[in-house]
Image (cartoon, rainbow, N blue to C red; front, side):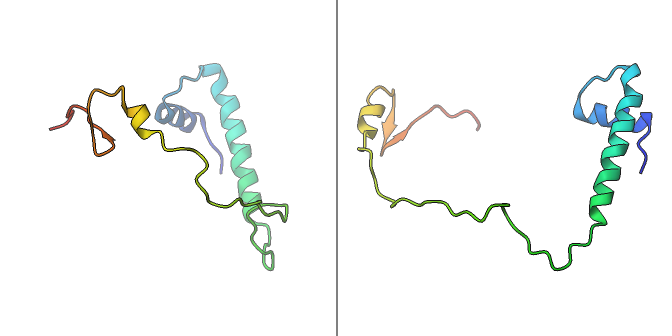
Length: 95
């Protein structure tokens, strides 16, 4: 799939970026190359290849799910102008 200058300009417009006229042909060539590479990757036979999330067979060390910090909510909310039931009260913005 070849990308032409008009398509590059349309992509730039949608992305809200400005591209100099001199650079459009270079971007068209680069994007065409990227799409050709993606198409080439799509043609690779992956039958029998097991999907994986990461190339290394690693597991994360897990720690116990325990509270390690004291509850300082009252301290943090002491400077707030309005608090109710542990929640900060703010003025209504949308009616």
